[in-house]
Length: 146
Image 1 (cartoon, helix red, strand yellow):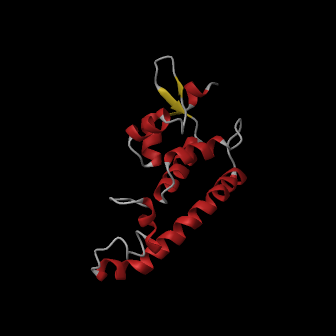
Image 2: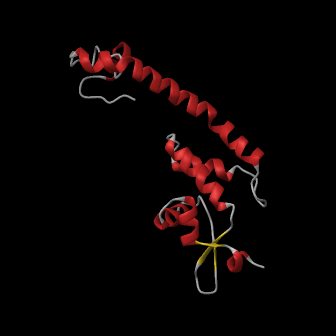
């Protein structure tokens, strides 16, 4: 029996995934999830979309951009319901980026009190925004560095 006849409706997926229907439409428009249409043009989703939505939401929560999530999902094997080893490969592909973000946030946390409270108001002296006064090498005028 085709998915369009047996799949989950958009309302049921939204309810079970804990997201608004508009989120499902957005994810589909962005190519993160897919559905099939019935003869009446209603969306039907395979049950496995619930796991995929959960992974997308967790990845978003830790700050992974949707474009990167989409690219990572596209690297997973298709043609079968994704299993634990597929999801494990996905999490391993994000590990280095997450470690980098954790280190950056830890550094910010450790320096933030002294930075906000220092009152220097000087870009040249700020260890967070301009370590080693690297902005001076870019010439005069305002500069933003990340």
